Length: 229
Image 1 (spheres, rainbow, N blue to C red):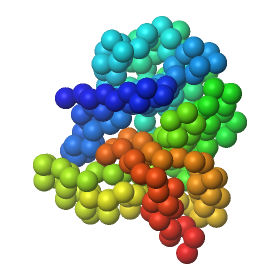
Image 2 (image 1 turned 135 degrees about the vertical axis):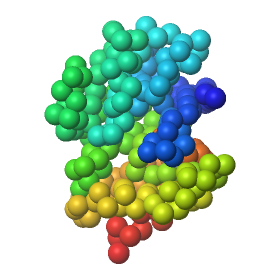
Image 3 (image 1 turned 180 degrees about the vertical axis):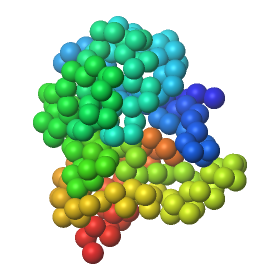
Image 4 (image 1 turned 60 degrees about the vertical axis):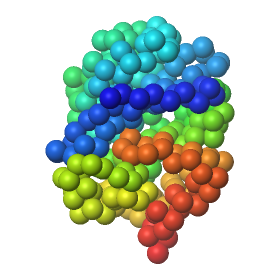
């Protein structure tokens, strides 16, 4: 069953069921309101996100659709059909992988929405992922995708087993697969040092429970402490 959450600060997110190689990981779509443009940015559109959010936001005001890394693009063409007026922005390298997607831009550290309180940060040193992380200043929220998981519990045995084997069950942090994607530790560490300078108290990720804590930056640094070793 889909669930949505509205912070009342120009940020909402939608949780929907989704299976990945048999695991019941679910997926999360984030929607950020840009006051300067009176428009919405939708990050990582999931299955049927538009039908779920349409009663809560005007789809005609969705001006941007974002694929934030090399993997979260499966529902993008459907989202484009639902919101034909929206520009489509991709993570670096994704356009070559998905030549069928009509893209309007490639995201970098120079956010096109900086003036509306939404900053972007690319995590370097992981060319197989090329994930963009977003900081929404009004709600003090860091929006991540696959860099971290926070699946605290599951009633599905294969999900529990697979995530334990992947080193990311019942805890917040990266999986073994994500760690293996780091090819240049110095570059990745520099990217996280930038992220840790942001005053966030909430971390949204695609898979798992949203983390809400005053010490969220400390928890994120601890999860990636191996980059400093």
